Amino acid sequence: MTSPASVTPTEVQETLIAPGQALRGLGPATLWRYRELAWVLAKRDFSVRYRQTVLGVAWAVIQPLVSMIVLHLFFGKAMGLEDKVGGAAYPVFLFAGLLPWTLFTSTVTAATQSLIANRHILTKVYFPRVVLPVSAAAVPLVDFALALLVLFGLMVALGVAFSWSLLALPLALLGACLSAIGVGLGLSAITVWYRDVRHLLPFILQTWFFISPVIYPPSIIPEAYRGWLHLNPMTGVIEAFRAAILGNDLSPTTLLLPIAIGIILTAIGGYLFLRTERRFADVI
Image (spheres, rainbow, N blue to C red):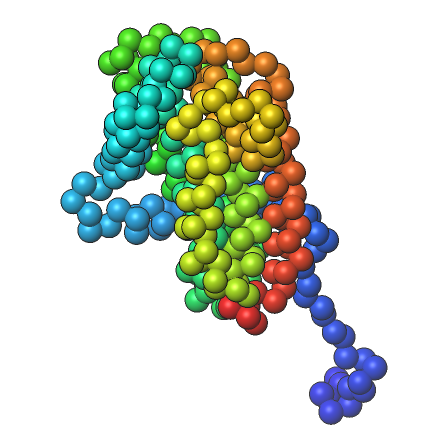
């Protein structure tokens, strides 16, 4: 038997624990392996979000519904935008833009704050850190599903016909989710080093709202500047979502472009996240 004192330095085995190659840890296999952890974190976030509230999950539909009413009165009625949406019912047109926008902003905000909010877990237990921002996207998705039912009720109330284009809604939703997770991954990694992002994010999203076609159709933008609007990834998402709801012309480009942009944003955000995650526990 060899005593510890007789072990020479050359016999000591060293094990290096390091993150995998960039983007490898972001793969579906990694997320599936830690699906139970992601599920527990998502259930906890959902419970905390509506704990000790009088109206509970009703807040998921109150916020977009009240926003729709206020924006309808101000922009639709007072500024006359309801006459520039190609004959569509402006409340439905507006709500169909607010839903993907609210999903996007809620997901980005939750993902950005996920690492800071879970610092007590992050510094004590090893698991792929990407589980935190991805699981944070679950609650906004539940809110979106509830608000979507309100939109369908609004369509029935206003006599807007349901069309087969609604079958394309999951693809439009996929583009919104990929874009939100991509932006959220990148911002969550930056927030670990620079907490200014938490204070800057509301201003960024507020500005982003007005340069996205949520309350107006892209057709009112002068043609010379309309091309710039499509540099905004949310333009394609909102147009695809709105076309699926209203039964407008839904070309493959309208449907697939937001998904392609979402994949690019997820790749960029995921690369930034995985390149910096090795120092999260030291800096946070």
